[in-house]
Structure formats: structure tokens, C-alpha cells
Image (cartoon, rainbow, N blue to C red; front, side, top):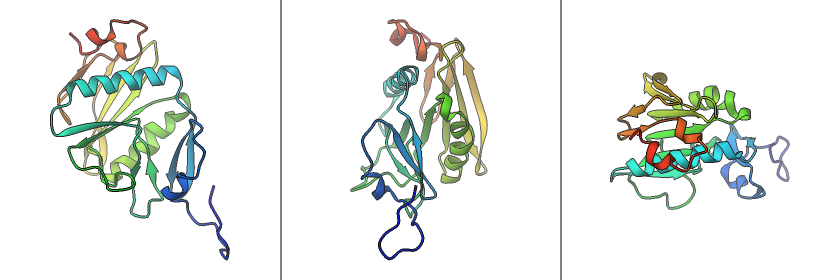
Length: 199
């Protein structure tokens, strides 16, 4: 989708200003080179994993960092490339006076949905690396084998740092120390808060 104004002969690229005029219908609207990239509202398994991971990150978060859910980031100065990670971690700083973040977070996290598999594993992985996001996690909320894959920026590209599946303990020190067991991101069990950290 692009917009043509009066007197224009070519459609112009969309910017984040155009996103504000789109309906609030539960879909997630992002921009890639001025074109709309739309994702449907997350399904319950995605929402559960995202919520529990946010809780885990918040529980481990030291002073100097802040956790954000579904907050937009402008990946270029023209504001025609705009992404919304499921979770992001920023160093403690003042919020932008207006608009969205324009600096890389310390960590971006995407929880994979069936329709976002290629986008999260390839497209966003390359975009976040080019933008300078130092750490990138991909969370697979598969109820049979949930997993967390951690990537570290190295020479302008991501290299795999670690991967944990189901009951394997995921442990990292960046951007701050976190431990979690992927199984408890999706398990239908009310004791997940006691167990998710591996205790």
C-alpha cells in the first residue's frame, strides 16, 4: 500500500505518520521501505509465551534497563522502515519526546507465529543486524518443543550464541543475566512462575 497525494504522479512511500490513520483492529502494522507489512493479532499460545517472557525479563531486569512490549522502532531516518518487536530492552534513557524509538535496543525479541516464521528468522534478523541491535532472540512457542534461540551481533551479522529447547535451561548474561526454561513459556500449568527460572 502506498499513498498518492494531489498533484503526485507516483505513489509516495508510507511513513509512521500514515500508520496513525490506520484502524485499531488488532493487526500489527509495520513498514518496510515505505510499504505496509501487516500481521494478524497474536493467537493465545503466542500471547502466553510473550507475557511469560516479559515477566521473566522484568523479574531479572536490573537498574539501567527497561522492558517494552510491542513498542515501535524507526529503523531509518525517513521513518519508512518501522518495526515492532514483541519485546525490546533499552538501556535506561529518556523516552523520545515524540514518536518512536530511533536508536537500536540492546535486545529485540520476536515470538514466532506460523505466518511470521520466515519474517522472524530471516527478514527481521537481517534488518535488526543492519540496524545494530546487539542481541536478538527468537522464541518458538511450539507446545511440544518450545525453544529460545539467542543471536549475538558480530561483524555486522548475527551468529548463533545459544539455543535451548523444552526443559533445557536457557542462560545468558546479555543484556543482563537471565535464566529461563522454555517449557514454562507455554505449559498449561499454574506453577510456571516458580519454575520458569529453572529453580
